[in-house]
Length: 127
Image 1 (cartoon, rainbow, N blue to C red):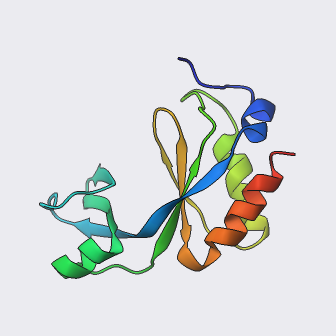
Image 2: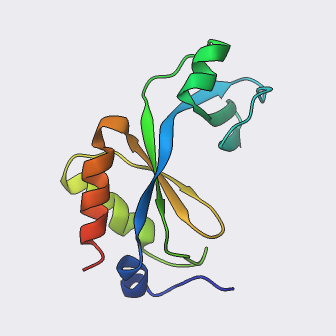
Image 3: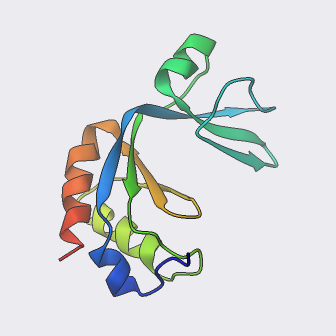
């Protein structure tokens, strides 16, 4: 099933939901032997998004703790403007946002203390 491409329709269908837990970014020279929610391979090393507890158990260092928000709208990978609209709305209220795009949904990692406010802001984009 193809995802939505019309920005107005997408913003009307965001339905942000919060994934339970606290998440951290960890960068390592090689892929870790732990389950990661996301893995990005860069020239400088491997970046993984892990449950905070997993990172703590492994002794991995991280800088910040994030909450995970999933935008329930099924967006097309070729849709234009979604990331910009979401990031701009959150930037207006001083919330940083890291975006991971999946095939079906976009996922936002925001500072854990800002999750509720971010959901409120994103819900306002639907109107």
